[in-house]
Length: 150
Image (cartoon, rainbow, N blue to C red; front, side, top):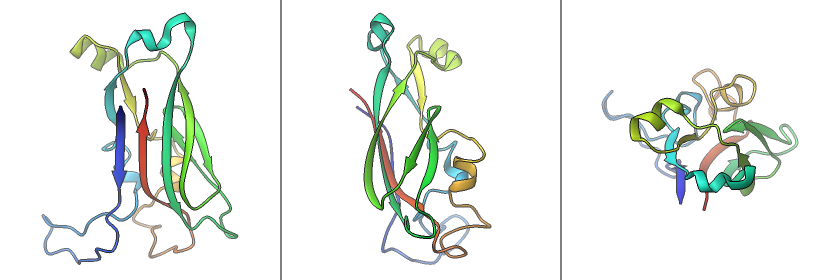
């Protein structure tokens, strides 16, 4: 089951036509962190016998190289360090720490999947207005990601 996915719009460099029609995103920015968090249902059975639930994370990065040999991001409380361009896959373990408010609302075990809103890893390493692919073209940027589990 896919929990969260995002892809930048590549090869479409159209200028914005108005404030209601901005240019499409090419890279994940730090303002998208909260928007891209997805509430998902993970059954209690996934945590039987005290085991952790494994989730797959795929990231597509550009500009990993001599200037920036690696970059780290935090997803669901776990740090992932990327050291290669293109798509790379990682496994993270999720502990039974559900979103209580959402779980009560839907009467299900709801978890939030996506990037954490943490300084140092996510808010500093994702694109932002003052530091983006135009102002710092050598910095690594995320062009796509997918988070999924079974």
